[in-house]
Length: 407
Image (cartoon, rainbow, N blue to C red; front, side, top):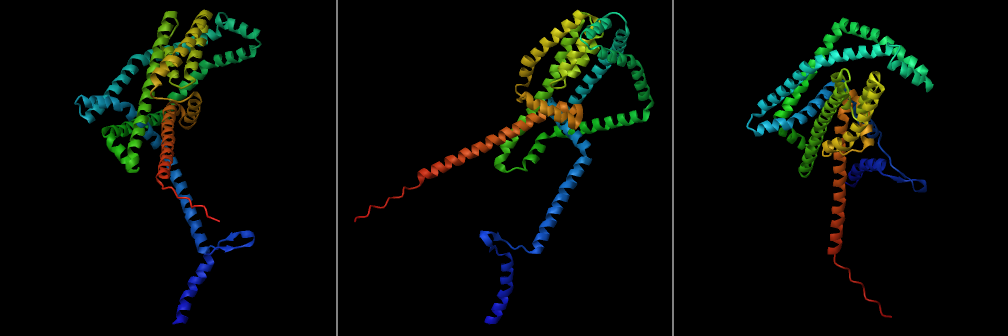
């Protein structure tokens, strides 16, 4: 019996010896690992890396659809207040969504039908005006040439004049290539229509029952964390809606104000210039400056006094917009400093172009909201643990000290 017991213990003893740490020289602990365990660990690591790379590759392949989904989410957040308002007035939610879509379409059709033909004709006339003035041997061009020659920048004027002289032929070539590429134009139009239909459809389902999607997302978190996550979602939705509507409102104010000033000054093509300035004002940080520079350049071709008045107007308006309009509109939506906004716009523009630059600020604000809440939550946990430890220390009974020994 004892021999059989020894034989049964022998394999376990060998296995224990292979995995038991041994003390080497100078106190170094050596751990023996079985070759099968090493192979299994390597296989698991390789499979994990393959799964991660495959997921990243799949996300890259469907990046366009993901972008459409993000745009649909932003659209749903922006339109949700209007749909909620209709629902509070006893309109069925699905009908309210369709009415909201119809209102947006009617507004766009009205803008396109009323303003676009006027703006297009004014833009064409504006280009012809700039080219004609640039080629005129007298007037503003000659004054600009003499001023730049006095500053030692005559070469720059010659280069600019050559580029302006080539502008009509380049525009003609661009128009011909645009008209001849009917296949590419049709593909682009089909892509735009499919993207628009997809975005509107996704936004419709998001608006139809947003609470259900929120509850599904909340299921990913523990029960105690769900109220905090819901609060973060509400704050993020408010940031998105507030920023987008505020940005549109500020650009509208900029366009209307510029149009009135141009009419007062008697500038040609005020509608085209005001629209260009309003569109440029949508771009964060640099849009207003680009629009102002465009106005001053065109005003200089009219007269130096007009250019000076427009320069003063742009400087005053930018101060009013930066000090009054933006704080009033963005105070509850965006709480980012200028450096973070600059970095966010650069990253968004590099990733998604102009749409990325426009959406970069609300995305950065959402990240700020989440990070701020996480830091505050961890601070509260640390304070609670410290208070709990202090209470436990107070509740522990004091240990009586031993009496002194008598000699």
